[in-house]
Image: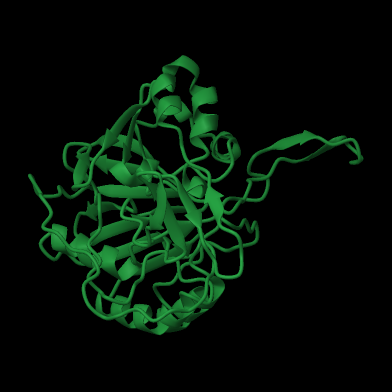
Length: 346
């Protein structure tokens, strides 16, 4: 969930930290492909750039349209205020597919998968970056498309189930829709709750679990409260916010974020901490720097990201247009704008 807010002072210092358990080191992969199944924008005129390939005009085919001369019109990729990425990992000739987040509408992601000619049954696991509905509602459509063949692991943090609301000064609190544990389990999903780091594909895909908040200036999501023991309490850190990490052979780490409520700098530093300081090669996903509460952070985030010298930055979803413009100026070679259907091969 991504909204603006009212600026507030945030004290410097560690906001949340712990010692992660890493039972095995992350194993490098030969290649990884990230397909943006859902994002906030589409643009059929966006040119290819570096490792990013854009969907061609006409992707999705056509549908009957009574107002057209020949009775047909385009069936384009959908965009919505949500995020979903299909991650395809290859190692030693073996390929595995994972879905990271599922968008904000019941059918947006499954419809885009159809238009992109991706078989949903080829997906081996689903990772939910956090519990906000703009990253989870598409589970509904996947259940209906897969029918009785669901039987998929869904990786989440234990706080994923929290009932939450937004409390913006001057407005009534607004409750955020919450995913039903019962609905997922009855559909046949295998729900895996983990606070600590966990792995997929024989140690080749790392899910961060809870991210330490060590920068001191990335505030989480201050307008958020959670219903705990029958009372609404402040829940600003969104501790269920997690990211996905892949170590690409001879290049470094690719980090995929959902909203980045943990703070994109916190996430990238934690990725290096978990992998014995492997370099950051690419960061893809939401950086959550839009709106008056987060835009003042942009210069500092850009400076801290610059110290990590990433080769590619592809911000998406809730990053915000001011942050995107700042990124394009600060990282002219690394910055790649995202659109629905963009495919990045690394």
